Length: 173
Image 1 (spheres, rainbow, N blue to C red):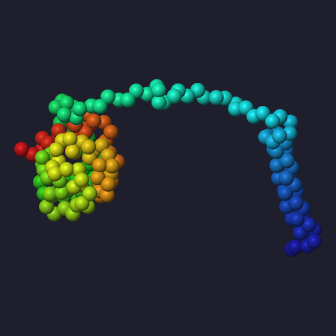
Image 2 (image 1 turned 90 degrees about the vertical axis):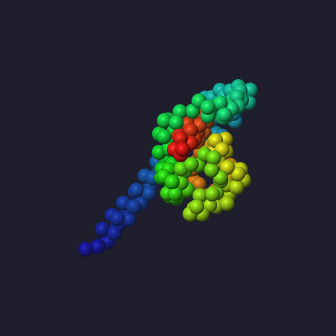
Image 3 (image 1 turned 135 degrees about the horizontal axis):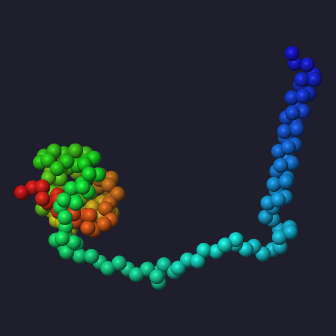
């Protein structure tokens, strides 16, 4: 089955393949060589992207008064914004999920829901969940209360936060 001629053919095939790869590498290096020979010492970029100075061009955004935005909030739009929160929170009285119930959250004391084990990180926000405290917390939960168990990334738009808080406030009497 394996005679000398078969072994010689197999070894010759491997050697031929190796030579083709070596030759291909040499040709590629010759065509695309970026070294010092042949191109001089200067290196130029193929193209340059003009960039504006971000410090001088960007004007700081005016600070928005949350009380004014909250006064014009749309509770119906806030109900739509609550959908991602439903994964962890419920709005029925006394119904805790992964997070505490949000029924009556506006005006309620922080860390006061019976039957829910808080992490203790929320106490640095304040005494009660005022609309301003809720807005600050919803903007960046981990920044407002480092160590909180809440894994939500935050809500950047102040109008969305105001709408959500207005809807939560409309749930209880």
